[in-house]
Image (tube, rainbow, N blue to C red):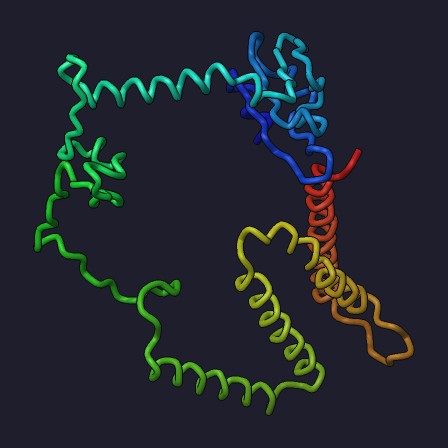
Length: 283
């Protein structure tokens, strides 16, 4: 995302800082090279090393046609601009207080701006000011456009299911589990139990976690993926001491596919986590 934005924008302002640690490197030299000539990078994290790889603290440098500002005293350098903004605000307030331009100040309490900035008038405390009046009331929604309640969708939207529906689902599920337990082979029953528990644990782990934590969660759940890989290996070649016969061919190929997908998940999760942590690692 940063590399794409660097090619499109003319100015980049970076502010990422970690207390007590070097600033994370977010803009690499390759990103600087991809920027248009004459572009500017304002690195406000220069005091801690800078978010840009080419930032030089306390200096303004030009690299690959891009000006990189690495001042560490930007607040003190903006004293003139701050004074100008403050003086302009006072000047505009004075204009409101003396609209006739005859030197006489008129504190018009009907003016919302003056009323909101007045604390005491003629010995009376006028603070806090009343709530501001709306310049235009929003139009009332027509009655014909009233929202119509939608029935619950099949994807979980709408109102929650009624107790009768919930009880019916539980009864049907109990009957299905009893049928499987009564007529299924013992080996299948053991695998089915593990499968149901895995589905339940996976649902609770993924869906009950804030989306902002999904990236670190990816590396934590690699432990579950490693269990899947071990189970698939056992299915391909069960240990001889267990006395279990070799599985059928389709089961072996299914285990091979499971190992491949699990390997991608494990290595991908660790790669993403390492890349994320490398941004904040001390160099």
